[in-house]
Image (tube, helix red, strand yellow):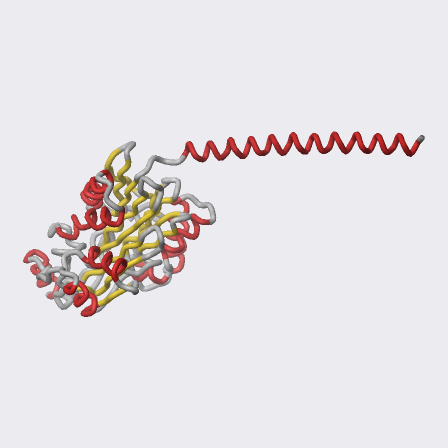
Length: 339
């Protein structure tokens, strides 16, 4: 009888335990569902476009127009950054860009899509829209990057027009520079030599592009970070996208944009990810010859439409366009508070 009572007692306790476990499981499932609902409702509106520097405003405007006309995001990027590429008053991108120390305007650009397919051109001369050539590399070659004379030959074969990109204004600046012939980048003047654009489209897919005429008075043949996938630009459509501006050598040394995306993969927000990589670059360059004029900034956006930016020194800003607030400039926080 005693054994029978013990058996019944154990069975009853087991039933209670199973019932409690079932109740807990149901509760957990409901809480998980609730959490997921909250995450879903917190996702920002799409699309969203982010571009570096004030010339990003005009670029955003054109890209937004393309997206709203149901054009593919890659086309929107090409059209958007094509505005500063063609503007002779934007002297750090495309036509009218400040030349190298030999008086040659040399251009770098890259573009990347949701499938991680990418195209890039570097040390390209005589073509006003290198971003459009980079897109052709992505779409019509088995390669990622073409450079120099090969990139120019490819562009001409694809129907691009060769032209002189050195405007009289930039030529005069170069002639004046020749009087002393000293290469010394100026923070937030010469260093804002890039327009980088990130797009999260209506379907929640990520795209990005960079285009630049590079650092003024550079050695002929120098290539910066902008055409290098993983340095000037990187995205993973499962995670987010990031792009850089500033001293390209420092970004290349640290695979900057790829590292920002990897930190977002680990759960950091776009701003947190940008901040950590900026601080890493800062630390690695503390005793470096470039430290005196080192400026690097990143922008980033994740799959939820959260975005942010961060830089080493103050002065870096970026343009953001979304349905909620329209097109506007936002100021990035910086590692160094004062110049």
